[in-house]
Length: 347
Ligand code: SAM
Ligand code: DTB
Ligand code: SF4
Image (cartoon, protein in one colour):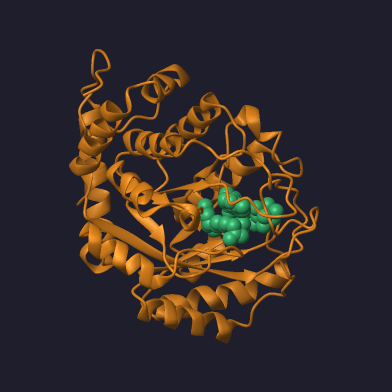
């Protein structure tokens, strides 16, 4: 297999074999794949805003916004459109190229749609890429959002199909796959990933990545979240995941989805600079920037600027990385696929 091969037929044991490689071999492999597709010193930067916070009817055990758990998150109604746009202006001034809006909903209601549509249109007019994460979407809702100018939709698979039932009971894995397919069919870019550190096994981590990599088209953006343990959620006292296992998960996401942006997502506030640097070496090339994720803390903007400068990283300007370029990268990679390898080689 070459460093540019894009596959959609990953077997669980192949992925587990990657997890079982010596750390240095795995990182070397991931770096080769990363450098075949991306400038390894450029990182895409998004800013996140919670447009509707708390009181969510779903029971996701990791989530501080679920109404099933007593956390310190205050409930807030859907934000006014002007307020969202003011936040988007600030994000742009800070250097973000994409503005992601998240709502603590099971799914958007009909009455919500006119407001979110105005948000999409307004953010787009500012020259930012738009992303939303609003829960499940019907095919019709996905089309309406796409027509309003929504570039990306984030909807995570969260974990493996087997472990999923331990985490959420109010919606199924199949529901999530259906939303991803509605988003794709509507012509939007897909942002889909998951969370590690929820007490899952290595095989579950492999299973999550297998599901993502075997989607008919790889998500353009793959957020890998480290669980943020929030007081009041059922997961508040879980043991920490070995940080090297987190780096391995990033490296394998990079290998399995070579042309996708792998996002070093929630959990950076709890990570050392050295651990984050290792994640960038393993192929992470996207982050959330700004002091707040949805309800939990993210590193201060200054701190990230210093980290970028110390590592010689630069924010990716989307003007220089058009859709056409991304399409071309994927097309090149797919062309390679016509000559499948006889057997798999680590490097
Ligand atoms: N309510 C919508 C949904 O769940 O589809 C959108 C917002 S939800 C907060 C978006 C994602 O944030 C979840 O799918 C989950 O992967 C991630 N997330 C939530 N709480 C988290 C936590 N404590 N640590 C890490 N990731 C978390
Ligand atoms: C994703 O995968 N991670 C982001 C984004 N998509 C919406 C959310 C992280 C949330 C972390 C917990 C919080 O701040 O509430
Ligand atoms: Fe609600 Fe989303 Fe949190 Fe689940 S992850 S409880 S759906 S806000």
